[in-house]
Image (cartoon, rainbow, N blue to C red; front, side, top):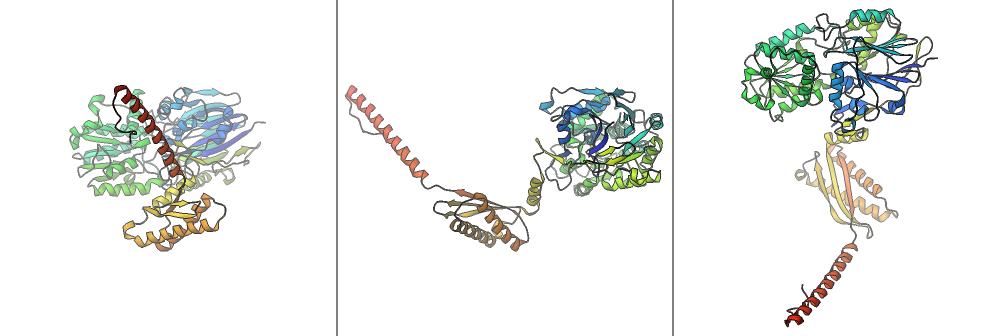
Length: 600
């Protein structure tokens, strides 16, 4: 009997972090390995990737990782995944090149080279399973859907997609191929639900191109700063076309965008209407251009432009100072988690005197399937079961409703959570043997060393600050040697709260002395926890705030210093006697009397 199951490791009930495992007998087929950007309460975290524990334990069963496209939500976790699990990577030519860029800075992966380029005509035979692909329309060229043909039927994963009849050949959906797939038995469809939250269809890309060009022409006297996602090559092409049409030059701000653009140009996925040297200008030389001649394409670190735009608005960028002669043109549609950040950034930009225009305010621009697009996909493929993916629960719910409207029954719609295992049991999928799947937080070079406790501490520090009390004790004499030294950061202004600080100091001493005199066995943690509890309670009663209280208790040993002093003194005396003997010998030899018997 064939063992078939579907397990999402990300991409369900969240925006991004796509990763799905299809298990067929002893083979695991992984669809995408993406990241997501942190929520606002994940302070200091750079990115979030799936939990790879299941794959580490079953690494010998992994047939490969199959990538749908080159955005971070599909390939961003590869640098962290491949450090723990070595597996072959399959994707289109551009997707593979972007995957290589994603891992190039990882020293541990410098020798990794198990890449396989595929296209819509590729079929890969894995014995009982065959993997094939189909072209889809997204905001990056060579996006692919994946078809897994099993003994029980096909499992189809769309990746990010939409239908756009005006898309050029790099972006167009192969409708005929979809019809061909639908003529076979599609057991399950995992389809993009991210855009189904709106009843409106996205405008086609030709309209967006006209809108961008019109914006450039309307602001012909201003310097234009375009905020875009680095891997949104379709948007970059539209910006290049508008730049050339308005006789401007383009400045690429950041290594990420330069790497992506250079790669796309090399693979001929970007069309340059003029020679490179007449289009691109180095960021350092941008100051030599007039405002009316300049377009700055800003994508930020790791392809996320809004946070770096925020730095620009604060005057923290060394090259770009935003002012009255600037138009900031936000061409990305922010996720729900970023909407608050975008609003604050816009406000700061207005304070700097800049004009701000956001494409999502005027047009519904999205690379994801609308409700209507999803229904077309379902009608063409005619799946027996449907799993909405790539979206928060609210859009999974709207995708579920859209599927029901085209006759997918409710009991055939899999509203999955991470770690849910849907097993095929002869004639139906059933939820069985699910397990907990967490997420891995990436902070700098650290992988997974940031947990809930660290995030809680960071949140407390950001909200109520820190209160440090340093005190020295003599454990043998069971007494406090010196009064506590108190430090506060982000809590209260010390000079204006002397009474509060004095009382906190007295409470610290009282608590320590009480512990030392009443407790026979000594425990450092117990001592510090007692101080922390007493001081925290007092500070909350007085301020209604809960700073992080950190008692630092040091011990002094009265016997060590004299002993050390004595040994130094004896050593000194020995040196003096040796010096005296040398001097006496020399004086006898030369008939010179020593001036002194010792040298002090």
